[in-house]
Length: 239
View (tube, rainbow, N blue to C red):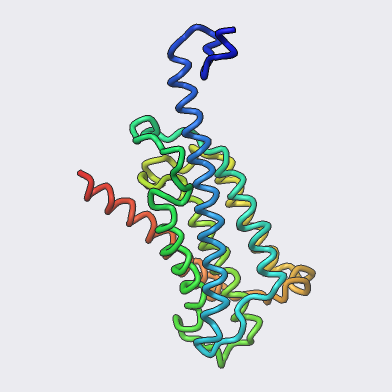
């Protein structure tokens, strides 16, 4: 009778189980927030790139099948791996979440609204950075660079999004091995889409030169660097 009336039942008669349960619950909730933060910021980046390009007099930067690829592979694989992120070292030091608090609270919405647009802008930078202007590039080559830059920036975002306080070096790169594997797999698949002839026909891509690929890699790292620097600056301010 007492079990039926109780809000919580300790099956092992150990009050430490309450702490463990709270820690596990917070970990699950934070992983949900990471997934939302990752997928939404990525989607905002795609939207910004597609909307901004015509305003700048540029062609449509992504085809429908390329957007589908991003949503299924670049978003999907790392997003699933973020769902099994281990408990953060400071999980139990944080104040509890209110039951009425939105999942977008505590900086999540702010993150999406600055990282997402940053991704979209960075994806279009191949037009303005380097020596090759759009007029000298085949449109499909330019679109491939935009496509690749956006995909790689999202993979960098996946690595950085693991914590909103600790940098990747502080967390340890390999403390979430499934995520590292997912990022590497997504990267290899993206390279396949760019360089394999049958994939080029499906996705409308062109093989990039080493310089073009290096430019896409360099530009995509801007998102990762910006997020990591923002976390470092936040730590400095909280000291």
